[in-house]
Every structure is written in C-alpha cells, then in structure tokens.
View 1 (cartoon, helix red, strand yellow):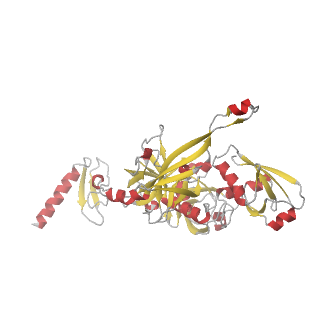
View 2: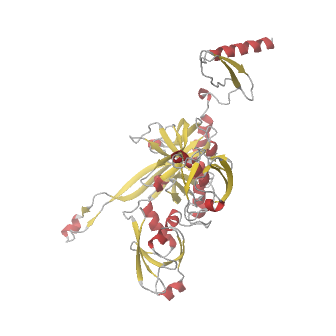
View 3: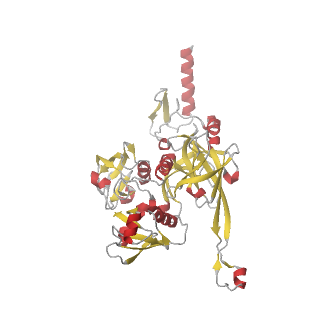
Length: 498
C-alpha cells in the first residue's frame, strides 16, 4: 500500500510540475532530500530551465514567524532624545545695545533644537550603539528604555565616516542584543527593523534584504561616503536612525541609518551599516577613543571599468588594483597594479565595496591572505594591515590624526621653561599628510591654531575634528608656532576640504 501511495504521489507531483513548465519540455522529478534536482528532456521547442520542487531549504513567506525575533529585540532598542543649542541663521541688532551706543554690534540668537532617534543596548552595563547624526552636537542626551525608565547618557565616541556613535548610561542588568553575522546575510533573507519612528516607541517592521554592499553618499565629499550598506525594504522612517536591523533569530545584523526618499519619509529602500563594521567601530571607540582603520594600501576600482584600458584582464568580478599610495603594505607583499583582488582569507570579493567591508572589520597588524587574479593566473599574498601612515601604531586622533599625517607630543613643564612659553605642543614625527604638505617639519612647536591656544595634541585634534564634522564655518587651519633653533615665529595654512 505504501508503495502504491508513493507512486501516486510522484505521479501527482509530476503532473503539477508539468503544468508549470513551458510546452515542449517533459520534466522528470528526482526526489532526493539531500540534493533535490529536476532533469529535463528537451524536444527542441523550449528552453531548458532548472526548477527545484522538492525538499526546498527555504520557508514559505507566509509561514515565517517574526514574533520570536520581535520579542527578543524590542527590549534592547531604546528611544533617544537630544537637545542642542545652535545659532539662528539670521543675525539681529540687540535693542539694548543699540540704545546704549553699541548699535554696530551684532550677535546671532541662540536656538534650542530637539531631535530624536533610536539606539541599541549592547552590554548589560549600559553601552548603547546609535548613529553619529543622532547625537552629533548634542548638549544633553536622554535615553528611554522600553520599560519607560529614562537615563541621562554621555557620548563615549563618534565616527562620522561610518555614522556610528557609542553612548553610555549608568544602569545595570540591562537586556543587550545578541550580535549576528552580517557577512553571511543573504539577499532575499527576512529582516526586521526595530526602532522609534516619529517618536512611536517599540515599532517593528519587516522586509527582506534587497541588496548588499550599497555605496551611498551621506554628505558632500568622498569622506562622507559609506562603502557597504545593507539595503532592505523594511519600512524605516525619521526616528528609526540608530535602531536595530535583526534577522529572524533576533540577532543584530545592522544599524539602521538612512533611507532613500524624495519626501523625507520611507519610499521603499532603507540602508543599514553592517554589524561587522559597526561592531568593530564601537569596540575601537570604547578601547581607544577613536577608530583605528586598517588598510591594504591600494587604490581600487571596478574591473569592469578597466577592461578597455587594460584588455588583459580575465575576470570582471572583484577589485582592480589601480595604484598604490607612497606607503603600501599590499605593494610590499607583492601585489601589482593590474591585479584583480578576488578573495580575502578565502572569502569571495565581488566588488570594490565588498573588499572595503572585508578589510574594515580587521584590526591594525592583522595578517590577511589576499587572492588575486593576475591576467588569468591566481596568486596568494599575505598582507599585514597598517594605518594610512604605513605603520601599526594606535592613533589617538582617529581621522584627524590620519589626515594631518603627524604625531604630536605635549611639552613638559621643563621644556616650556627652557623655551620661554606656557603652552604648546611639538611635532614629534611626520608621515604622509597635511602637515608635511604645508611644509611643517619635525620639531616645530605649535602654539596657536585658528586663534586657539594649544596645550595638548587632543586640543589640536578637536579643532580639526570640528571642522571635518561641519561644526564650524572654518574650512582650514591657520597654524602659528616656531622652530626652537631659530625662535622666529612661523605661520602655516592648511586647507582641509580640498
């Protein structure tokens, strides 16, 4: 009886399948649970097409249960309210100053600005990950948990380039979210966006991953370019920024950051920073106060764009090595211009964005195996990742230190007395960057930058960081100092936005 039913079942299955394939093709289904396949006999009147019908690994959309993931994550997502003071756009004449003879003195009124967003609890003791643009410039930050308890928060560190920030509240026994693996996330996979759109707390929306490795501009320059977003169609609106993108297991796979919209509200596409990148960023912020960016030391482009200029290219998926900076770990390892990087530690590189994401998750000093296609021949190289200065030293100044391309040292009290000054820092070493480009040499004592006295390297970094974030009308640096051997005052100008 069982044999008869099995034969009838197979006959029914073949009938159903036959009704869905093109005329002229007879489909024979081979029911193999471990490797289901379909074999076709083609009479020449239709296309041959693979059509898997049995033992499908996927779950039908209508059978997907999101309740577990929602319940697991909603308590780990917080509401963030920020208050900041900004200058109004128009200046005005203060009437009291006018009548008392100071009518030519103008000042801009201060305005109180409020904003809101979301954040994700990542530790039991109160560390929270969010977007940089949620907390940037905030005078005060108020975090409200899902149970309505509120706490004042402080900023631990921010990274405008990835739009990630780390803040902290003083609380214990919180419910942190579990990190997932964004690198194994697949296009078409179900995800949930959890956040607080329009101040509507504890909101969950569902969608699928519609693309990976998206590159979009979050500002006006290449420095504002995030190279590897997860793109989803889960509804995300203002207030969702900094919230969680989770898989159906309730694991954090991304931080919701941006939407594509002509109206300011959701229009079908939203973008999240992969947790592989965001997690590394907040780890650096907590440990060093600044992100330590590891680089291969290559300028890359899409090999598809190079096929006319370099006709010897054999592969068009990966990252084409176009040139090297002055100091390059990749060049030292043996990689050459014209190589197409196709894998990192055995993981496939599909595009330049894919390479960026795979390298960004590594630490300075990590050794990675780079596989290249050199005009049809595969080669492996071991590359030690370094910073933009060509070494593995921790850079406290983060992006500011990388751009300046120099190391600075605070002067001791004895050194100040010998130099006859009460403040200043010295340039202790120089590599590639703005400091060298403007002509400053090792040993120069920097005393004033943009009319501000400099006492520590952090003072200098703070000024540069503020300019890079657009927090001031200044676009460059005017540096005043001297060389100890001559004592003559010297001035240098640096353009930070060229």
